[in-house]
Image (cartoon, rainbow, N blue to C red):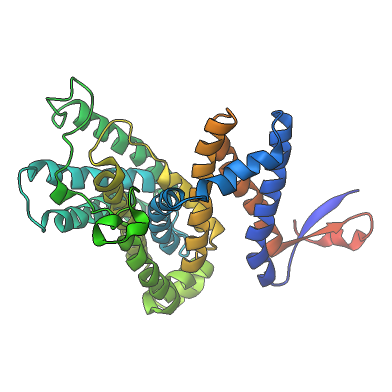
Length: 369
């Protein structure tokens, strides 16, 4: 049977909602087949992947701890994606945010003052925005491709981290291991259990999640209810109309990339001043890249991004669980992430196109594929 994609007269709005659901279903089906090929019981594998990590408070705390930076970065990326500004370098911007925060933590290591951590948070946001500004400058002034520039800068930021922990910031008492000194208590986010919440006693979850909780309604208001958010949306959906209305392209490029960089920088400080407690050469969480899937799966909407970040965090935890219980490689979680993005992109095609059979409908030959 000969099939062809024919443009719809109008985008199918219901498919925008159902595409993530269908993509998740197809991912689960593909994962079922993968586990069978690997000789594992798919039902037991799914239990280890999606249920066992959430059986106790420690598992739930780890879920929230991983979902928080994913959600934060994805919210920042969504602002740019709505305007067709494709920031792919959030991982590098997160690194630079962590570098700025770590620098202050090291400099004020002997200072026990309540202003140290807030200063680190501000510095991390500025650091991420500064790194993103390099991409904004190249795109706005020289019309370069922001995808390539932001991606290449990620590897530069990674090398800067390694230079610092192997060189000037290496802890002299660490037996030549490439790590900084452990941050002082004043430079760390307090565990939630320290606020008297006994539910989180013995877990790693900390007050950095409050940054994300504040960012969610702020991002929702900016994207859904502010005039600036409307400008970004119009620029992405109808560039000609945006230019006719007098919206400034360069201003939108700068704003969207700086917001995305600042959000990634905040995610960086939440990690180094949270569960890590220092900067080291193995700090490659991959949150910046995974957040691209989160933003896409969440349909560039704040509430959708919250749900998508929880799902992706569960995939992280599930990958670790099956590694222990079923002796499978941890990379299986990355396989699920890749399949999810692949199926989501495939389903998104059906938003603007419909599939027709050329054998049953010869007139479809006149359509535009």
